[in-house]
Image (cartoon, rainbow, N blue to C red; front, top):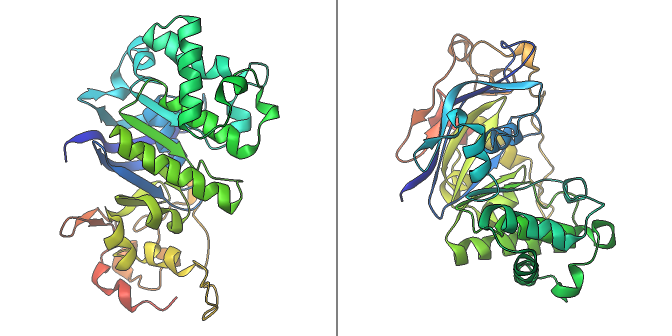
Length: 324
């Protein structure tokens, strides 16, 4: 599969202290038409990685190294005007909270139509007509009438569908979805996941789907990358990683999933993600890992190549032995 996006050694640091890096050496590749899930606990760096792709880091953060190659162009080194041409056009993002991402003072139609006018040069009437088509495609009933609605008149699921319509307006090559089912009920979550997967199949676009839920990974992902403390610690084909993880953090996350049949208790991972000013010198997961040995604490562990997958674990062949 041809490579669409390639992130190499991406580092994001606090503007006031370059030594504090919430994203520290991320490597991630996405093929054309591939759906990749990025998984990890809150604070692992998933959303900051996505915002780096979009060039939307806040004023308190700076990229301090690495590259983000999109169709051969390094997004970190593009002029602002070129990045604006790509953002919302060839690369689009569905943000985590649609109520704060949608502008409350503008009607839905205007917001969906805006990228069509800015990037494709459509007239206002043509853009609104296309906006109605997009709303219909993402499952909003009576789409033309909904163009005049404001965000507070829609349910959470409808607002998220509007965000997806906006992101898809210019037929992007890459869609980034940052936990788009957060705060939605289970039924609506399933509908949104099925919608994104179906649109990805129909349009042949690549998707980077950020989540903390391995049930989502099992449902939609072609590949999965697991992040911990600012680094990717394991990645590979989703089915393979779910069936036989090669990093103890991945195995621990899977052990946290509830057993719907009630045959076992939840098994949480002890401890917590390290603070930015307290990152361990070796494996960042070593303080919480039941497999950790002195060698794990001596030096940073690289991503090891393992037959089409990667793991940042020196004892990846013993992960199956762990009893969480």
